[in-house]
Length: 386
Image (cartoon, rainbow, N blue to C red; front, side, top):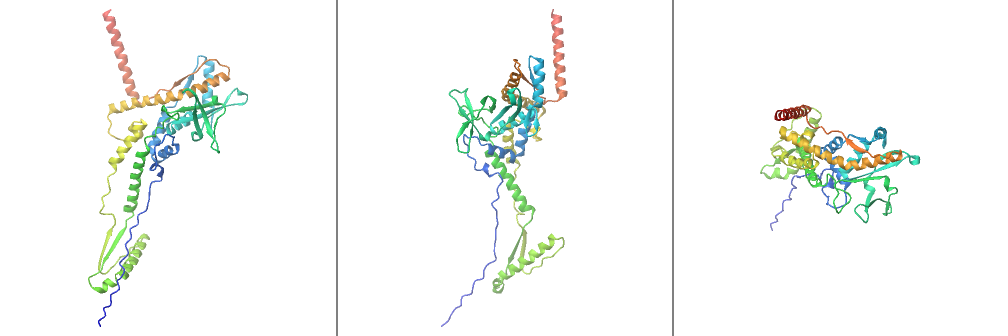
């Protein structure tokens, strides 16, 4: 009887492919579901994740500043402007401009802003003007659109009206008819921001893989049976010698790698083509910047822009800043009116903003010269006709 002994199969060399589940640190953007409730945490994450969006909002805040009060009573005007420049606004800051910066920052980012006028002892002075946290404040609408109450949700879940509503300041940014909370400037950005961060995260991962070179050492045993049996042993020996060579290379010494047989060494990823990200990144950036209303050249972007186009963009930027100032004027007028009444003045105050200058002074001087020349020609024509 003939017995055939089956040859024991040798295990093949190990193959490994490690791929981590890395994602960008702002995972909340990918799981965002548009709802009517304000998502202030999400909008702050967008500013933190995309520096150009944060820079655009800060430029809007800086350009919108600079205001003084004008009153019929010159004495009241001088005292009121002195109060505007010295009033405490919290966290070691003074001046109404620091309050407006924080107030406008909250209004643009979260879609609404809330503040408080803190009266001093005796009710004869405004001790401070503070900007509050909008996360804990809710709006309860009244019987008419002109009536609303600011409430605060307590630990037990109850929504209680805040006392002294006449001292509270509230401004929604572009409120919708069905929502009194306003609309954030960043409302349309979560989807595009998530795509942009995925592109940047992928670029970082690809550079980490391609920049720190990985090698693939491939050993092909000959056709004879002896080498096939010892394939596992020789693969382990090649791995040890290759690791020793790489370790000595890191320490600065040169170590040659010698192998017997058909051994192939390749760089992992060297033959792969990295996707071009300039076109999609620019398209997304154009959408984000267009939402802020900031001309690209103000953010340091050298996109194609003619001189006339830059002038028109600056004019549009001026209209955007003027619209922001219109949202802040009611708040300033309430603060000024309360201060005037506390100090016994019966006049009212009108806010006068600084001129918005985004144009070249040389061009403005030429425009003024042309206007004066046109005026002189017009007067001469009238004199000749007479």
